[in-house]
View (tube, protein in one colour):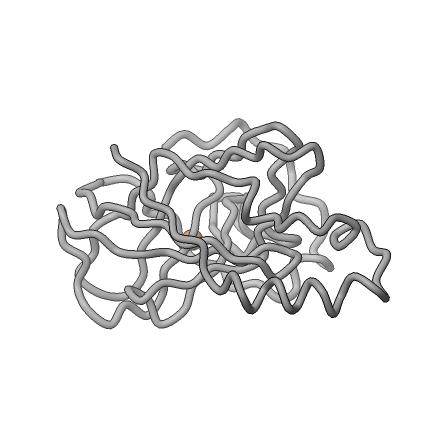
Length: 183
Ligand SMILES: [Cu+2]
């Protein structure tokens, strides 16, 4: 698939970085390099859905020598979006929920979003997403840089996990270990 990536808000991010550079010494800002600039996306697609919510999947590759962190996502195809993981729920059955800390793409490494695992959740769809259509998805990184890519909508029967809204996962008891959930 041809990959289409647009770097968003470049001028805004530059001026933000300039204002930031003098005062901040955190790991996330130690380099003037924007996190979004070191990431490319492959194999991106969205599960077709008539309404409600659906999942988006992709593989991200980070060419930088430091990790980068995806902290938020948005899409014109969704009222809002979340970064999700799949984990054992209260009953032991797998549920999906917001992933604490976002998606960390290791230095020089990849991070894969796939059915049965981490994914982008597109919620409150304003219109059906039909197979063959395309939509844009924008990722925001920990340094507030952004990247936008185009993903194709595909028919897919999997990725049917129940949604368990987040907010208290940090306080939850340790989940029992379970075999990897296929999907
Ligand atoms: Cu989800």
